[in-house]
Image 1 (tube, rainbow, N blue to C red):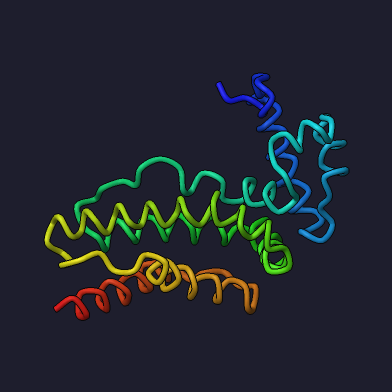
Image 2 (image 1 turned 60 degrees about the horizontal axis):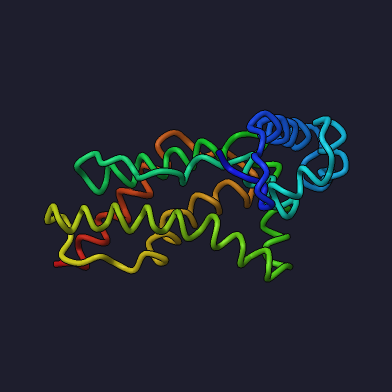
Length: 195
């Protein structure tokens, strides 16, 4: 059982109520209309209960939108291309949801403006995602698909960058198979550089 930082058990019911309410508010108001005051009141919890779990609006929003995409070890499909495709497809589906599309522009602005928030985001989101990618790459090296592990942050940017640009710049949705095409190009490039 997780605790709230002071040794008291955290309630999974409160966690779920807050995240469910966060998704509802984002769908209705977008990121700009989202506040912790409104969230706590609507979820029927105190603001202190919210702040014991998440330190900022941005952290709550990310938890509500894509919280489970980087937990646990990545599935081993037996192929680097398939491993990466499953990971990126799951991410693409999550960030293509209307709630996520309304949240991401404001979330990115907050991360850009607040260096301490960006650092927390890196440790709680970026680093776990890159650890999953490193695991996939190490398996590919062990299988002989690659001779050495490529630079993980660069690979992360190559995978996520085109997808986020497509989703955010016209606020569109990823066309069918878009994540697969990104992965195909990236893996082909990795293998050609590896020769």
